[in-house]
Length: 99
Image (cartoon, rainbow, N blue to C red; front, side, top):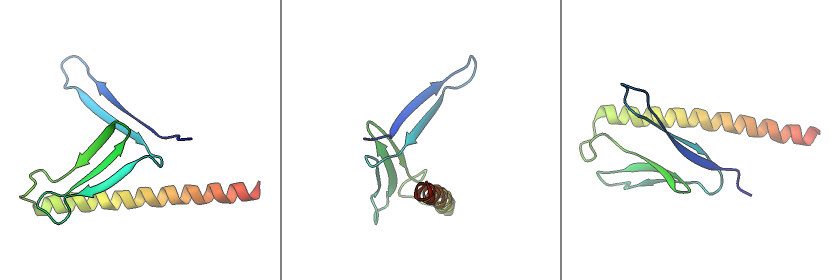
């Protein structure tokens, strides 16, 4: 049984722009891929159900050093997230073994 889900929220207040939020709670049905690798328009896509997000440089085909720095920052934070999830999973496994 899948525990994953995703949702999108729209928030607005008088006189302020509408804010859009997308939340993913990932499971085995999540699709994560890099499309366009080796071309001038690579992008990272995360999809779950009918919700997806695509991440690419501001001006595909005219990639700058700033774009590369943002991609590296994304990768660094994804690595931190992965390490935290691995830490929690390892704790859950050792807790299940001790019980």
